Image 1 (cartoon, rainbow, N blue to C red):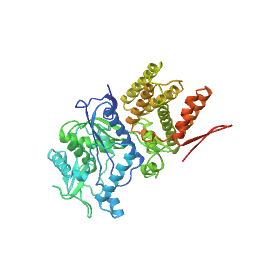
Image 2: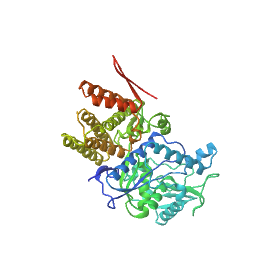
Image 3: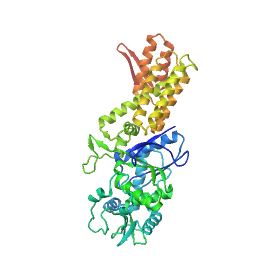
Image 4: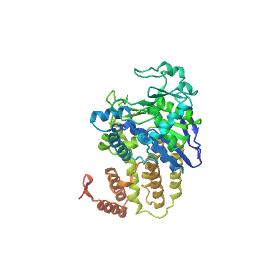
Amino acid sequence: MTIQIYNTLTRQKETFKPMEEGKVKMYVCGPTVYNYIHIGNARPAIVFDTVRRYLEYRGFDVDYVLNFTDVDDKIIKTAKEVGEEVPALADRFVNAYLEDVGALGVKKATKNPRVMDTMDDIIAFISALIDKGYAYEADGDVYFKPRSFDSYGKLSHQSIDELRSGARIQVGEKKEDPLDFALWKKAKDDEIAWKSPWGEGRPGWHIECSAMVKKHLGDTIDIHAGGQDLTFPHHENEIAQSEAMNGKPFANYWMHNGYINIDNEKMSKSLGNFVLSRDLIQAHDPRVLRFFMLSVHYRNPINFTEELLESAKTSLERIQTAYHNLSHRRDSSLNLTNNDAKWLQMVEAAMSNFEQDMDDDFNTANAISVLFDLSKEANVYLQEHQTSTKVIDAFQDAIAQILTVLGINILEDEEILLDETIEALIEERNEARKNRNFSRADEIRDMLKEKSIVLEDTPQGVRWKRGK
Protein backbone atom coordinates (compact mmCIF):
# COMPACT_ATOMS: atom_id res chain seq x y z
CA MET A 1 0.00 0.00 0.00
CA THR A 2 1.51 3.30 -1.15
CA ILE A 3 -0.59 6.45 -1.02
CA GLN A 4 0.76 9.48 -2.87
CA ILE A 5 -0.27 12.96 -1.70
CA TYR A 6 0.44 16.19 -3.56
CA ASN A 7 2.12 18.35 -0.92
CA THR A 8 1.62 22.09 -1.45
CA LEU A 9 4.75 22.69 0.64
CA THR A 10 7.04 20.85 -1.81
CA ARG A 11 4.83 21.14 -4.91
CA GLN A 12 5.14 17.46 -5.71
CA LYS A 13 3.53 14.13 -4.93
CA GLU A 14 5.06 12.36 -1.96
CA THR A 15 4.60 8.92 -0.47
CA PHE A 16 2.38 9.25 2.58
CA LYS A 17 4.16 8.13 5.74
CA PRO A 18 2.25 9.00 8.91
CA MET A 19 4.28 9.70 12.02
CA GLU A 20 2.68 6.82 13.91
CA GLU A 21 1.95 3.54 12.17
CA GLY A 22 -1.76 3.04 11.55
CA LYS A 23 -2.73 6.51 12.83
CA VAL A 24 -3.28 9.84 11.08
CA LYS A 25 -3.52 13.29 12.65
CA MET A 26 -5.52 15.50 10.28
CA TYR A 27 -6.65 19.12 10.71
CA VAL A 28 -9.02 20.93 8.35
CA CYS A 29 -9.72 24.66 8.52
CA GLY A 30 -13.45 25.08 9.07
CA PRO A 31 -15.80 28.01 8.46
CA THR A 32 -16.20 31.42 10.03
CA VAL A 33 -19.75 31.06 11.29
CA TYR A 34 -21.62 34.26 10.43
CA ASN A 35 -23.87 32.99 7.63
CA TYR A 36 -24.99 29.83 5.85
CA ILE A 37 -22.21 28.16 3.87
CA HIS A 38 -21.97 28.45 0.10
CA ILE A 39 -20.85 25.69 -2.24
CA GLY A 40 -17.28 26.97 -2.06
CA ASN A 41 -17.32 26.08 1.66
CA ALA A 42 -19.00 22.76 0.91
CA ARG A 43 -16.24 21.60 -1.43
CA PRO A 44 -13.46 21.24 1.18
CA ALA A 45 -15.94 19.67 3.59
CA ILE A 46 -16.76 16.99 1.00
CA VAL A 47 -13.23 16.58 -0.39
CA PHE A 48 -11.42 16.11 2.90
CA ASP A 49 -14.20 13.96 4.33
CA THR A 50 -13.55 11.69 1.34
CA VAL A 51 -9.81 11.73 2.03
CA ARG A 52 -10.57 10.73 5.61
CA ARG A 53 -12.93 7.96 4.46
CA TYR A 54 -10.33 6.52 2.10
CA LEU A 55 -7.63 6.57 4.76
CA GLU A 56 -10.03 4.71 7.05
CA TYR A 57 -10.85 2.27 4.22
CA ARG A 58 -7.10 1.64 4.02
CA GLY A 59 -7.06 0.79 7.72
CA PHE A 60 -5.86 4.03 9.32
CA ASP A 61 -7.32 5.42 12.54
CA VAL A 62 -7.89 9.08 11.62
CA ASP A 63 -8.05 11.75 14.31
CA TYR A 64 -9.98 14.34 12.27
CA VAL A 65 -10.23 17.85 13.69
CA LEU A 66 -12.21 20.65 12.02
CA ASN A 67 -12.46 24.02 13.76
CA PHE A 68 -15.08 26.76 13.91
CA THR A 69 -14.10 30.42 13.98
CA ASP A 70 -16.85 31.69 16.27
CA VAL A 71 -15.51 35.20 16.99
CA ASP A 72 -14.32 37.45 14.17
CA ASP A 73 -14.92 40.89 12.62
CA LYS A 74 -17.59 39.50 10.26
CA ILE A 75 -19.41 37.71 13.08
CA ILE A 76 -19.37 40.83 15.28
CA LYS A 77 -20.63 42.99 12.38
CA THR A 78 -23.44 40.56 11.50
CA ALA A 79 -24.47 40.20 15.16
CA LYS A 80 -24.83 43.98 15.45
CA GLU A 81 -26.83 44.16 12.22
CA VAL A 82 -29.34 41.51 13.32
CA GLY A 83 -29.41 42.52 16.99
CA GLU A 84 -28.09 39.19 18.27
CA GLU A 85 -25.34 38.34 20.74
CA VAL A 86 -22.16 36.99 19.14
CA PRO A 87 -22.24 33.59 20.93
CA ALA A 88 -25.90 33.06 19.97
CA LEU A 89 -25.26 33.96 16.32
CA ALA A 90 -22.23 31.68 16.22
CA ASP A 91 -24.17 28.78 17.76
CA ARG A 92 -26.92 29.20 15.21
CA PHE A 93 -24.58 29.02 12.23
CA VAL A 94 -22.45 26.22 13.70
CA ASN A 95 -25.62 24.15 13.89
CA ALA A 96 -26.58 25.20 10.36
CA TYR A 97 -23.15 24.15 9.06
CA LEU A 98 -23.35 20.75 10.72
CA GLU A 99 -26.86 20.26 9.32
CA ASP A 100 -25.82 21.20 5.78
CA VAL A 101 -22.63 19.13 5.60
CA GLY A 102 -24.41 16.25 7.31
CA ALA A 103 -26.96 16.28 4.49
CA LEU A 104 -24.00 16.15 2.08
CA GLY A 105 -22.76 12.92 3.69
CA VAL A 106 -19.93 14.43 5.74
CA LYS A 107 -19.05 12.35 8.81
CA LYS A 108 -18.81 13.98 12.22
CA ALA A 109 -15.30 15.16 13.04
CA THR A 110 -13.42 13.64 15.93
CA LYS A 111 -13.45 17.15 17.42
CA ASN A 112 -14.88 20.54 16.43
CA PRO A 113 -12.93 23.04 18.57
CA ARG A 114 -14.08 26.65 18.75
CA VAL A 115 -12.17 29.86 19.39
CA MET A 116 -14.23 30.88 22.42
CA ASP A 117 -13.45 27.53 24.07
CA THR A 118 -9.72 27.84 23.33
CA MET A 119 -9.08 31.34 24.67
CA ASP A 120 -6.72 30.36 27.52
CA ASP A 121 -4.61 28.27 25.13
CA ILE A 122 -4.48 31.10 22.58
CA ILE A 123 -3.37 33.63 25.20
CA ALA A 124 -0.68 31.25 26.50
CA PHE A 125 0.52 30.65 22.91
CA ILE A 126 0.82 34.40 22.23
CA SER A 127 2.62 35.00 25.52
CA ALA A 128 5.19 32.34 24.63
CA LEU A 129 5.80 33.92 21.20
CA ILE A 130 6.46 37.29 22.89
CA ASP A 131 8.86 35.65 25.33
CA LYS A 132 10.73 33.99 22.44
CA GLY A 133 11.10 37.31 20.61
CA TYR A 134 8.80 36.49 17.69
CA ALA A 135 6.00 38.86 18.70
CA TYR A 136 5.51 42.21 20.41
CA GLU A 137 2.75 44.22 22.08
CA ALA A 138 1.78 47.68 20.79
CA ASP A 139 -0.89 49.62 22.68
CA GLY A 140 -3.04 46.56 23.45
CA ASP A 141 -2.46 44.82 20.10
CA VAL A 142 0.03 41.98 19.64
CA TYR A 143 1.82 41.38 16.35
CA PHE A 144 3.94 38.53 14.98
CA LYS A 145 7.17 39.44 13.14
CA PRO A 146 7.52 37.33 9.97
CA ARG A 147 11.07 38.62 9.45
CA SER A 148 12.05 36.88 12.68
CA PHE A 149 11.08 33.51 11.17
CA ASP A 150 13.72 32.52 8.61
CA SER A 151 11.59 30.34 6.35
CA TYR A 152 8.55 32.64 6.09
CA GLY A 153 6.98 32.23 2.64
CA LYS A 154 7.93 28.57 2.14
CA LEU A 155 4.34 27.34 1.71
CA SER A 156 3.27 29.99 -0.81
CA HIS A 157 6.76 29.90 -2.40
CA GLN A 158 7.29 33.64 -2.10
CA SER A 159 10.31 35.50 -0.78
CA ILE A 160 9.89 37.89 2.12
CA ASP A 161 10.87 40.82 -0.12
CA GLU A 162 8.14 39.92 -2.64
CA LEU A 163 5.63 39.78 0.19
CA ARG A 164 6.91 43.06 1.64
CA SER A 165 6.25 44.94 -1.62
CA GLY A 166 2.52 44.28 -1.39
CA ALA A 167 2.09 44.88 2.34
CA ARG A 168 0.66 48.08 3.83
CA ILE A 169 0.06 49.47 7.31
CA GLN A 170 -3.60 50.37 7.76
CA VAL A 171 -4.79 53.49 9.57
CA GLY A 172 -4.74 52.89 13.33
CA GLU A 173 -2.27 50.00 13.21
CA LYS A 174 0.94 50.30 15.20
CA LYS A 175 3.01 47.69 13.39
CA GLU A 176 6.76 47.89 13.23
CA ASP A 177 6.72 46.38 9.73
CA PRO A 178 3.91 46.16 7.13
CA LEU A 179 4.36 42.36 7.04
CA ASP A 180 3.61 41.96 10.76
CA PHE A 181 0.22 40.37 11.43
CA ALA A 182 -2.12 40.49 14.42
CA LEU A 183 -2.11 37.80 17.07
CA TRP A 184 -4.31 39.80 19.46
CA LYS A 185 -6.63 42.72 18.74
CA LYS A 186 -7.42 45.40 21.29
CA ALA A 187 -11.14 45.55 22.02
CA LYS A 188 -13.22 48.32 20.49
CA ASP A 189 -16.16 49.86 22.33
CA ASP A 190 -19.17 47.54 22.70
CA GLU A 191 -17.33 44.52 21.24
CA ILE A 192 -17.12 41.09 22.79
CA ALA A 193 -13.74 40.76 24.53
CA TRP A 194 -11.60 38.64 26.84
CA LYS A 195 -9.07 39.67 29.48
CA SER A 196 -5.41 39.18 28.61
CA PRO A 197 -1.96 40.38 29.75
CA TRP A 198 -2.25 43.11 27.08
CA GLY A 199 -5.73 44.30 28.06
CA GLU A 200 -9.15 43.28 26.86
CA GLY A 201 -9.41 42.03 23.30
CA ARG A 202 -9.74 38.97 21.11
CA PRO A 203 -7.49 36.80 18.95
CA GLY A 204 -6.42 37.45 15.40
CA TRP A 205 -7.58 34.91 12.84
CA HIS A 206 -4.36 32.97 12.23
CA ILE A 207 -3.39 32.22 15.83
CA GLU A 208 -6.55 30.27 16.61
CA CYS A 209 -5.70 27.31 14.35
CA SER A 210 -2.14 27.07 15.67
CA ALA A 211 -3.45 26.92 19.23
CA MET A 212 -6.18 24.40 18.39
CA VAL A 213 -3.79 22.08 16.54
CA LYS A 214 -1.36 22.14 19.44
CA LYS A 215 -4.11 21.51 22.00
CA HIS A 216 -5.93 18.71 20.19
CA LEU A 217 -3.31 17.05 17.96
CA GLY A 218 0.13 18.08 19.21
CA ASP A 219 3.10 20.07 17.90
CA THR A 220 3.34 18.24 14.55
CA ILE A 221 0.50 16.73 12.53
CA ASP A 222 0.37 14.51 9.45
CA ILE A 223 -2.07 16.43 7.22
CA HIS A 224 -3.25 20.03 7.27
CA ALA A 225 -5.95 20.81 4.72
CA GLY A 226 -8.17 23.60 3.47
CA GLY A 227 -9.21 25.64 0.46
CA GLN A 228 -6.64 26.99 -1.98
CA ASP A 229 -7.45 30.54 -0.87
CA LEU A 230 -6.08 29.76 2.61
CA THR A 231 -2.54 29.00 1.40
CA PHE A 232 -1.54 32.64 1.91
CA PRO A 233 -1.68 34.33 4.29
CA HIS A 234 -3.58 32.02 6.68
CA HIS A 235 -1.64 28.79 6.38
CA GLU A 236 1.66 30.58 5.83
CA ASN A 237 1.11 32.44 9.09
CA GLU A 238 0.08 29.26 10.91
CA ILE A 239 3.39 27.67 9.94
CA ALA A 240 5.39 30.67 11.14
CA GLN A 241 3.58 30.85 14.50
CA SER A 242 3.61 27.14 15.22
CA GLU A 243 7.17 26.39 14.14
CA ALA A 244 8.48 29.48 15.95
CA MET A 245 6.65 28.33 19.07
CA ASN A 246 7.41 24.60 18.97
CA GLY A 247 10.72 24.41 17.11
CA LYS A 248 9.31 21.51 15.05
CA PRO A 249 7.65 21.05 11.66
CA PHE A 250 3.98 22.03 11.90
CA ALA A 251 2.46 19.69 9.29
CA ASN A 252 4.14 17.10 7.08
CA TYR A 253 1.59 17.26 4.24
CA TRP A 254 -0.38 20.31 3.10
CA MET A 255 -3.47 19.70 0.95
CA HIS A 256 -5.53 22.39 -0.78
CA ASN A 257 -8.64 22.03 -2.94
CA GLY A 258 -9.28 24.15 -6.03
CA TYR A 259 -11.77 26.96 -6.53
CA ILE A 260 -15.37 26.71 -7.69
CA ASN A 261 -16.50 28.66 -10.73
CA ILE A 262 -20.13 29.56 -11.42
CA ASP A 263 -20.93 29.40 -15.12
CA ASN A 264 -17.19 29.70 -15.88
CA GLU A 265 -16.67 32.72 -13.60
CA LYS A 266 -14.87 32.49 -10.26
CA MET A 267 -17.41 32.48 -7.45
CA SER A 268 -17.30 35.74 -5.52
CA LYS A 269 -19.62 37.56 -3.16
CA SER A 270 -18.59 40.82 -4.80
CA LEU A 271 -19.89 39.46 -8.13
CA GLY A 272 -23.05 38.20 -6.44
CA ASN A 273 -22.70 34.79 -8.07
CA PHE A 274 -22.29 32.62 -4.97
CA VAL A 275 -24.79 29.84 -4.26
CA LEU A 276 -25.77 28.73 -0.76
CA SER A 277 -25.39 25.00 -0.11
CA ARG A 278 -28.66 25.04 1.81
CA ASP A 279 -30.60 26.25 -1.23
CA LEU A 280 -29.05 23.55 -3.43
CA ILE A 281 -29.77 20.84 -0.86
CA GLN A 282 -33.43 21.85 -0.84
CA ALA A 283 -33.62 21.85 -4.64
CA HIS A 284 -31.53 18.75 -5.40
CA ASP A 285 -30.69 15.35 -3.97
CA PRO A 286 -27.63 16.14 -1.79
CA ARG A 287 -26.06 12.86 -2.93
CA VAL A 288 -26.01 14.27 -6.45
CA LEU A 289 -24.29 17.43 -5.18
CA ARG A 290 -21.61 15.34 -3.50
CA PHE A 291 -21.21 13.13 -6.57
CA PHE A 292 -20.82 16.26 -8.70
CA MET A 293 -18.16 17.69 -6.36
CA LEU A 294 -16.15 14.46 -6.53
CA SER A 295 -16.40 14.14 -10.32
CA VAL A 296 -13.41 16.49 -10.67
CA HIS A 297 -10.01 15.99 -9.04
CA TYR A 298 -9.92 17.99 -5.81
CA ARG A 299 -6.94 20.16 -6.83
CA ASN A 300 -8.59 21.26 -10.09
CA PRO A 301 -11.14 24.07 -10.36
CA ILE A 302 -14.70 22.86 -10.77
CA ASN A 303 -17.33 24.64 -12.83
CA PHE A 304 -20.85 24.68 -11.45
CA THR A 305 -23.83 24.92 -13.78
CA GLU A 306 -27.34 23.53 -13.54
CA GLU A 307 -26.66 21.53 -16.71
CA LEU A 308 -23.60 19.85 -15.18
CA LEU A 309 -25.53 19.13 -12.01
CA GLU A 310 -28.29 17.50 -14.07
CA SER A 311 -25.66 15.43 -15.86
CA ALA A 312 -24.30 14.28 -12.48
CA LYS A 313 -27.83 13.26 -11.49
CA THR A 314 -28.18 11.13 -14.62
CA SER A 315 -24.79 9.54 -14.03
CA LEU A 316 -25.53 8.64 -10.42
CA GLU A 317 -28.90 7.19 -11.44
CA ARG A 318 -27.14 4.88 -13.92
CA ILE A 319 -25.06 3.49 -11.07
CA GLN A 320 -28.10 3.20 -8.79
CA THR A 321 -30.07 1.42 -11.50
CA ALA A 322 -27.32 -1.14 -12.04
CA TYR A 323 -27.15 -1.79 -8.30
CA HIS A 324 -30.93 -2.20 -8.02
CA ASN A 325 -31.06 -4.46 -11.09
CA LEU A 326 -28.56 -6.74 -9.38
CA SER A 327 -30.77 -6.85 -6.29
CA HIS A 328 -33.85 -7.77 -8.26
CA ARG A 329 -32.06 -10.55 -10.11
CA ARG A 330 -30.41 -12.04 -7.02
CA ASP A 331 -33.35 -14.09 -5.71
CA SER A 332 -33.68 -15.99 -8.98
CA SER A 333 -29.94 -16.71 -9.31
CA LEU A 334 -28.07 -19.97 -8.75
CA ASN A 335 -25.42 -20.56 -6.12
CA LEU A 336 -22.77 -21.19 -8.77
CA THR A 337 -22.45 -21.08 -12.57
CA ASN A 338 -19.67 -22.01 -15.00
CA ASN A 339 -18.78 -18.36 -15.69
CA ASP A 340 -18.25 -17.24 -12.08
CA ALA A 341 -14.44 -17.14 -12.17
CA LYS A 342 -14.29 -14.80 -15.18
CA TRP A 343 -16.72 -12.30 -13.67
CA LEU A 344 -15.22 -12.43 -10.18
CA GLN A 345 -11.79 -11.68 -11.65
CA MET A 346 -13.27 -8.71 -13.48
CA VAL A 347 -14.76 -7.30 -10.25
CA GLU A 348 -11.48 -7.87 -8.40
CA ALA A 349 -9.58 -6.02 -11.14
CA ALA A 350 -12.02 -3.11 -10.89
CA MET A 351 -11.44 -2.81 -7.14
CA SER A 352 -7.70 -2.88 -7.73
CA ASN A 353 -8.10 -0.02 -10.24
CA PHE A 354 -10.18 1.93 -7.73
CA GLU A 355 -7.47 1.63 -5.08
CA GLN A 356 -4.75 2.61 -7.55
CA ASP A 357 -6.73 5.72 -8.51
CA MET A 358 -7.38 6.74 -4.91
CA ASP A 359 -3.79 5.98 -3.91
CA ASP A 360 -2.75 8.51 -6.56
CA ASP A 361 -3.59 11.68 -4.62
CA PHE A 362 -7.23 10.66 -4.01
CA ASN A 363 -8.33 10.79 -7.64
CA THR A 364 -12.09 10.57 -7.16
CA ALA A 365 -12.74 11.45 -10.81
CA ASN A 366 -11.04 8.23 -11.91
CA ALA A 367 -12.69 6.31 -9.06
CA ILE A 368 -16.06 7.34 -10.46
CA SER A 369 -14.96 6.03 -13.88
CA VAL A 370 -14.38 2.67 -12.20
CA LEU A 371 -17.94 2.84 -10.86
CA PHE A 372 -19.27 3.42 -14.38
CA ASP A 373 -17.28 0.46 -15.68
CA LEU A 374 -18.60 -1.78 -12.89
CA SER A 375 -22.16 -0.68 -13.59
CA LYS A 376 -21.78 -1.31 -17.31
CA GLU A 377 -20.30 -4.77 -16.75
CA ALA A 378 -23.03 -5.59 -14.22
CA ASN A 379 -25.66 -4.80 -16.82
CA VAL A 380 -23.85 -7.00 -19.35
CA TYR A 381 -23.66 -9.81 -16.80
CA LEU A 382 -27.39 -9.62 -16.14
CA GLN A 383 -27.99 -10.51 -19.79
CA GLU A 384 -26.61 -14.01 -19.05
CA HIS A 385 -29.24 -16.74 -19.08
CA GLN A 386 -28.07 -18.01 -15.69
CA THR A 387 -26.58 -15.78 -13.02
CA SER A 388 -24.85 -16.54 -9.73
CA THR A 389 -25.56 -15.03 -6.32
CA LYS A 390 -21.81 -15.07 -5.70
CA VAL A 391 -21.09 -12.84 -8.70
CA ILE A 392 -24.06 -10.57 -7.98
CA ASP A 393 -22.85 -10.16 -4.39
CA ALA A 394 -19.35 -9.34 -5.66
CA PHE A 395 -20.69 -6.64 -8.01
CA GLN A 396 -22.88 -5.13 -5.30
CA ASP A 397 -20.16 -5.25 -2.64
CA ALA A 398 -17.71 -3.51 -4.97
CA ILE A 399 -20.17 -0.78 -5.94
CA ALA A 400 -21.20 -0.29 -2.31
CA GLN A 401 -17.58 -0.13 -1.08
CA ILE A 402 -16.63 2.55 -3.59
CA LEU A 403 -19.76 4.58 -2.91
CA THR A 404 -19.13 4.32 0.85
CA VAL A 405 -15.63 5.74 0.40
CA LEU A 406 -17.13 8.52 -1.72
CA GLY A 407 -19.69 9.13 1.04
CA ILE A 408 -22.74 8.41 -1.14
CA ASN A 409 -25.42 6.15 0.31
CA ILE A 410 -27.68 4.55 -2.28
CA LEU A 411 -28.72 1.69 -0.01
CA GLU A 412 -31.23 3.78 1.92
CA ASP A 413 -33.61 3.87 -1.06
CA GLU A 414 -33.05 0.30 -2.22
CA GLU A 415 -36.74 -0.48 -1.82
CA ILE A 416 -37.77 2.45 -4.00
CA LEU A 417 -37.70 1.58 -7.66
CA LEU A 418 -36.32 4.33 -9.88
CA ASP A 419 -37.99 4.92 -13.24
CA GLU A 420 -34.77 3.78 -14.93
CA THR A 421 -34.81 0.54 -12.92
CA ILE A 422 -38.40 -0.17 -13.93
CA GLU A 423 -37.61 0.44 -17.60
CA ALA A 424 -34.60 -1.88 -17.39
CA LEU A 425 -36.67 -4.64 -15.79
CA ILE A 426 -39.38 -4.28 -18.43
CA GLU A 427 -36.72 -4.54 -21.14
CA GLU A 428 -35.34 -7.67 -19.46
CA ARG A 429 -38.89 -9.10 -19.31
CA ASN A 430 -39.35 -8.41 -23.02
CA GLU A 431 -36.08 -10.22 -23.81
CA ALA A 432 -37.10 -13.13 -21.59
CA ARG A 433 -40.41 -13.50 -23.39
CA LYS A 434 -38.68 -13.26 -26.78
CA ASN A 435 -36.35 -16.07 -25.69
CA ARG A 436 -39.37 -18.06 -24.37
CA ASN A 437 -38.03 -17.78 -20.82
CA PHE A 438 -41.57 -17.34 -19.47
CA SER A 439 -40.71 -18.21 -15.88
CA ARG A 440 -38.31 -15.23 -15.71
CA ALA A 441 -40.84 -12.98 -17.44
CA ASP A 442 -43.51 -13.91 -14.90
CA GLU A 443 -41.04 -13.48 -12.08
CA ILE A 444 -40.28 -9.90 -13.15
CA ARG A 445 -43.98 -9.12 -13.51
CA ASP A 446 -44.65 -10.43 -9.97
CA MET A 447 -41.67 -8.49 -8.59
CA LEU A 448 -42.95 -5.26 -10.08
CA LYS A 449 -46.45 -6.02 -8.83
CA GLU A 450 -45.07 -6.32 -5.28
CA LYS A 451 -43.66 -2.81 -5.70
CA SER A 452 -47.08 -1.56 -6.87
CA ILE A 453 -45.93 -1.23 -10.48
CA VAL A 454 -48.79 -2.14 -12.82
CA LEU A 455 -47.91 -3.42 -16.32
CA GLU A 456 -50.23 -3.10 -19.29
CA ASP A 457 -49.50 -5.07 -22.47
CA THR A 458 -50.70 -2.98 -25.43
CA PRO A 459 -50.27 -3.26 -29.23
CA GLN A 460 -47.76 -0.41 -28.94
CA GLY A 461 -45.74 -2.23 -26.29
CA VAL A 462 -45.69 -2.47 -22.50
CA ARG A 463 -46.86 0.51 -20.54
CA TRP A 464 -46.49 0.87 -16.78
CA LYS A 465 -47.80 3.01 -13.96
CA ARG A 466 -47.39 3.20 -10.21
CA GLY A 467 -50.32 1.76 -8.29
CA LYS A 468 -51.51 2.82 -4.87
